[in-house]
Length: 222
Ligand SMILES: Cc1cc2nc3c(=O)[nH]c(=O)nc-3n(C[C@H](O)[C@H](O)[C@H](O)COP(=O)(O)O)c2cc1C
Image (cartoon, rainbow, N blue to C red):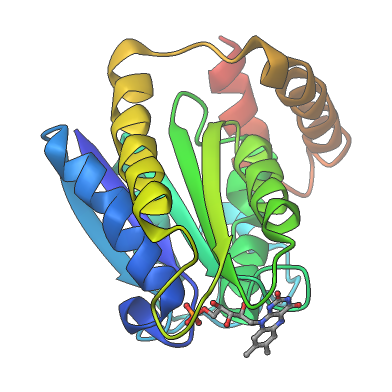
């Protein structure tokens, strides 16, 4: 089983979010899964230019690290998104990646995969960020298995740290269990099915301009 972790902190794994992610990954490793960390700090992911080329050809027009990240997302069994809370949302690095995933979202190309979310903050509102990342996961067609978040108590330390780290390791193990057992999340199906109807409808309307996505949906339906 391959679990990919993408961290959007400008501090990479050396910051607070990296510290919490380490514990989640330790739970993943304890379940016997293979892990890979992609730190957006050291990768080049430029903002989306809205050229629509991904919809036409399936490949982004910007020559940076996005396509290799995309391939890793398409071939992993599960993934983890980790971001600090920046003004009640994810970092610009993570948001740039989300926007670049627009073609994957139109195809809901990660259907059948599972994701967990990690967030840290100065003073809270962790749920808001986790829930935003979870919505992104659902637009990709994947299931969100839940998230963990915490304000910090200092550099790479947290209040009630033992309990937090226990829960972080449990989340990593739970991600692997959900992948292995193909866990159902019926409460997420309403959104995913509605979004799927919306995306296939949109691609249907744009079928002359977006042949890649039209063919993708034709294959998916057959
Ligand atoms: C630009 C910026 C914006 C931030 N915005 C918020 C915020 O809105 N709410 C909050 O609680 N913390 C905020 N913080 C604090 C970070 O979320 C917090 O320090 C986090 O643990 C940093 O994680 P890192 O060390 O992994 O980068 C902000 C920090 C920065 C640098």
